[in-house]
Length: 180
Image 1: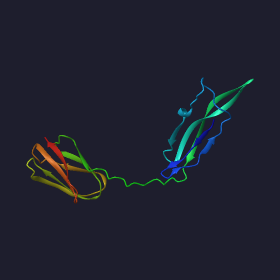
Image 2: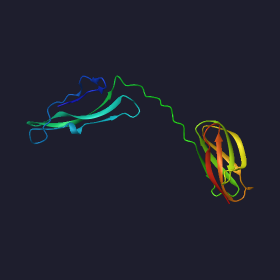
Image 3: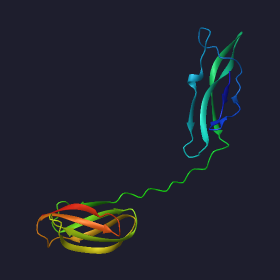
């Protein structure tokens, strides 16, 4: 008993490849039928496309004095596909836009951590609960990724406001601010 492999792709099967020729047949179980295919496995190599590690069994003859013991043994091999494609470079999806504010509630200064999918210019302003602009805070250059801005809210009355970050033609990013 030995170990063999086939390669399969959408055009069909390869010829059988012998990985390990056994010394003998395997005779471990009582009865006439022995099944050893359950003890095989395969695992793609994570950092090398087209390479797969496989394990399987082969018949091993062990000299046991006047008798020959016919056992199974394990064989491990690395297989490489000849028609493997190079890894596909996918465009990284831009991070979704978002904003985190702290401290909450605000007494004087609020910090806004703003995540943006692209760079450009962003304008920041505050709206009251009626949707009216109560303060224009700043217009500044921003980069893709995280940006940090700090605003003085000490002159505003206590209440609930909406901090709006509007970047170029993108949808606005809105976060509720509670001022004490």
